[in-house]
Image 1: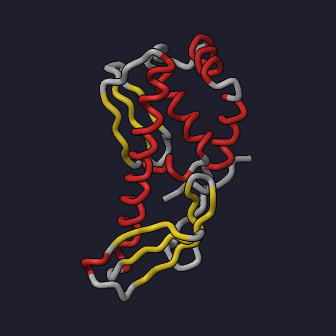
Image 2: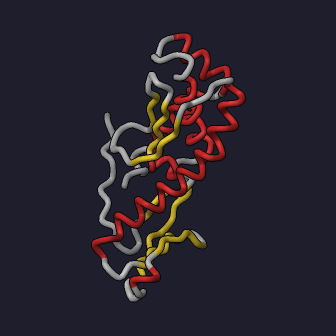
Length: 168
């Protein structure tokens, strides 16, 4: 049975995952426009936004920035370990794919990657980097992923479990 992703309302009390842990959304509407920002503090996702219609946009921007930070850390580390060099790494929002790798060596990572637990996010990065060696999902590709991450299949299952909550 396929699990249906949750539908976001972007209201107070809604839970958003960050690095696999829940954050409770707290909207602060009285902030002046110059104070618009998103922060994570003490188990809460604080969104200071005088315009309620911008809450989703601000949260998406915040997750994109967090994912870019994760990518800056993991991509160079794993590129060295796997002896590969991506031409570029781009973070953008997508509804279905967690990442992709083009035949020209460009990596794409989903802005929602920061919602996943650290080890599952790392699995996504390693998975995409392994495509620089094998541009398919054949046996050689999966052998490469499992050599890099012996628990890859467990992490893949964890990704499927976490993705229901990792929605923007």
